[in-house]
Image (cartoon, rainbow, N blue to C red):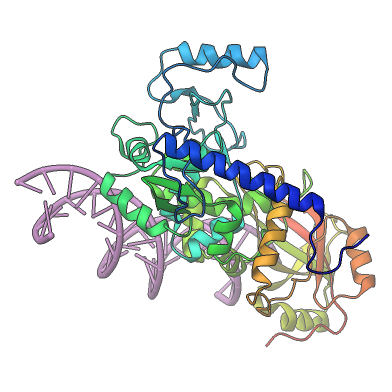
Length: 422
DNA sequence: AGACGCAGGGAGCATTATAC
DNA sequence: GTATAATGCTCCCTGCGTCT
């Protein structure tokens, strides 16, 4: 039964009373221990528990979700001699045919798990590029990893020791540069206060970077990549875009072709820099050519209007497409790309997008960018179904590899009444 | 805090790859 | 020889790290 507006149920009133009692008790305990009781900039009260980066004098009785086996492994790792937190190398997250980067495994005193890959949303990486915050973004990703138990904050002094210490495996810069980066990312990636760095959530970071929606699936970024020179880090932040796109493509099929200008729109990385990053992060590019109908003077002229001067006449000498020596209209398409990272599970992506939707509905949506029409399909049946639904652009599906095996050939189904190119 | 050297990145031009 | 897209190279500027 619904209550009249403005009236609260007896259960809710009781719950509120209970909450007030708990808050008063907690405040009294904090005052007794001399701990701060007021909320600071991030809206939370500083925790009484120590920073995860400060070593515990002794480990608790049990580690790892009540698992005896996991506890044994964690204890063994704790007793083994190790420099700082890095005890070995392992390759996680990078595909096998990618560059062989040694990955330091981080086993924190507080965590039994050897997690060395970070979940990276390519849309957030693009936001970092857009606002030129990749260096600060790298710090955010590293701190999220170092905050292994998900507490949400780290001591500034410990952060400085870990990220600028000459012997630290997590060293990325000098203390002076770290100070600049912490100031640069303040309010976007973290909030500083109380001698601590309070990390902001993925949702809040996306909102601060004005990323209205996480459209691409997250990828696994090896933590060791984050300690490489900033150029390499940027290259992998960029490569995450291709890893995510290619990861959705069924095995054996080329990823949908995408022009460098379009990539630039999505990633905020200009074409010239895209090539540098692709070389650095081992993103593989393959060329694509489209085959239209049978060649004739009028058909070639029509194709030239629609596809520009990339159009040429392809003579099928081996009869791969049909009759031997049959002429076809062909033109070059943008490249397909394969990134070096594995896909990560969606996880909280739907929830994050819902939160972002709520945030951006308050006046930030409606930028006029409609959903792009799909142009590249995995097989001819899907392309034909799309065609029958009505399309305004030419649509393509894979026809196989070219003679030298380096280029992909695509079939083309021309959209009815396609406007001629200017 | 200032000076110096080095690395990274942007821009422009020339060259290469690939098809005919 | 044609074309486009990609790649390679160089120059210049900016930012960072180190030293004093």
